[in-house]
Length: 336
Image (cartoon, rainbow, N blue to C red):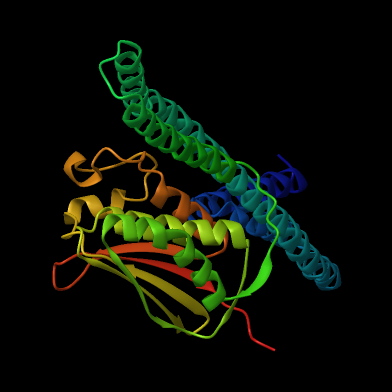
């Protein structure tokens, strides 16, 4: 084998060896970050070629001027390789972000679909009770066993109850879809006033005192009907689970760039293991606490609404053990 052939073989071997070593390092370094591989690949190629050229020039005893020319070519190619690597890495990162968004969307769609299937199960179960009651009362009236006036009132109560259930199902389904919200600038005190006015008759009927202890002066940018309904749902749950003679307290305070709307009841507390599940659609916990009223969608609807506004819902037991506290956090906007 002549000197030139030997130089070519040696150069090729060194080039392959450096490239293989660089590829192995990139495989380890970019195991969780593909963008690192995209950035490092052109650099590895340049390094492998530089090593191969350097070996070839030494083997062939290239003149010093020619050797410098080769070195200049390698140095000139390195910035271009780095630029190409950066561009590819940025593209890979964009593709990763897009893939992550698609994956999150698929997971959310799957969760929504599972939730809808569970909701159908709850609908068939929870609506069967009032329907059975209506049928029994209607049959009693038809047979002349029950007083028509009393029976009619009972039927109307059950129909109202079913109507609330259907409204909750429709609202939760709407929130799970792609909702276009009309945001309105509103004062916290005005929004809470509307919610309290809506729940006050129910609280009076239940013998529960509904009080507003303290409300901060701040403005929110919200879908007003949805946000009011979220607070109304929390208040209704609190009143429903507070014994007659008890009280429900509503407080709103500003903490930095957020307003925390807290509803405190006297429900007797909730088992710690149940707290994380309170916002799950349809979860009602102990039947003794729910009394068979509603479908367990109130907190789930409130959670969906608040999260859609960039906030959060938190539930905790009161330190004294007399009840629990539900806190809805909304971002605030600066008053002009």
